[in-house]
Amino acid sequence: TNLCTNKSYLEFYIHYIQAMEYLARQKTGNDNIRIPLVIMTSGDTDPLTRQLLADNNNFGMDEDMLTIVCQDKVAALKDGNAGLALDDDDRWAVQTKPHGHGDVHHLLHREGLVDKWEKEGRSHVVFLQ
Image (cartoon, rainbow, N blue to C red; front, top):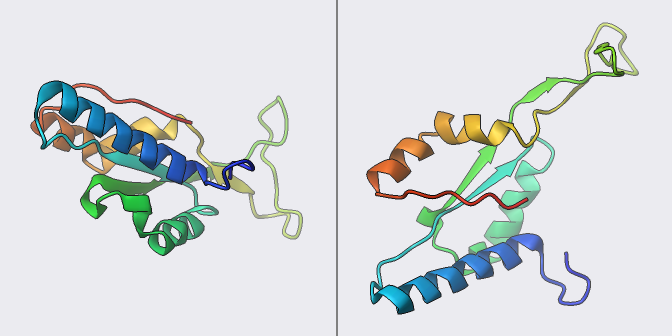
């Protein structure tokens, strides 16, 4: 959340996308331009992200233009030698963590978004983090 405006980063990004849509429509005269948003979450952030969007009517973004993808978890490493981090309460269990930013490419492919966007004629993807 921005402390000056009290807006969440999701609200800021969505309003930015809506401003880009407006500008593109003005420049092209095409009122059908719509820009999709994909949000990558983790197991820890997914429920609260979905709730924030639901509570705020997706900050005005159309439901069909918003996709949430949840990154997979992978084994956590404890040191530079790639030792596995074991659970503090169970020495036989390995700690896990979200896969990280690099997972976004796999998720876009897995969820069929790359193929969908190609069929829609989209040629560019912008990553914000």
